[in-house]
Image (cartoon, rainbow, N blue to C red; front, side):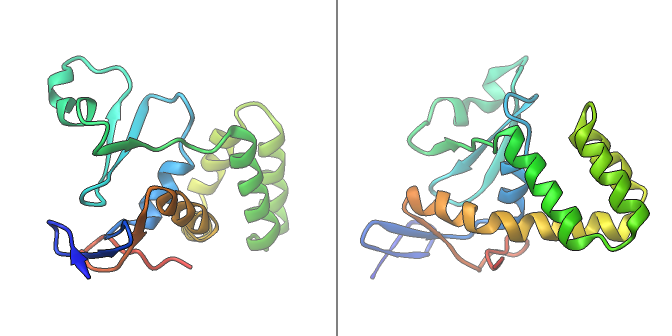
Length: 164
């Protein structure tokens, strides 16, 4: 089996790279057209973000001039992001008062901002939300990586690939 420059083996065109699936899930859950664009380095598995409005493009020249290396991560549509939060409340939140507040937040103005504002006041529920989101979006992240001929692997400190 051949290995890439980074030492990870690949076969049949599929490259095995250490990709942090929890971080990729968070980027997939970002706002489309928001203030930040995010990219995956096809050679290393690194995830990199940059402001959409850049004062000095030279800082991000590596990303901007190498589209064969860097692929932009396209976040989920708003409706999918809201539905993900509804599933979280439905499946993971036991406190009836908190459930009601979160469901109401998801129906009003700025639903995602209000959802997160409420959860920030409930530390353990916020932690459960991040774990839930990572688990729910891991299959999508893996499928997206597969379409790029990348298989996420364990192997780099702080960059786990094992979300089921």
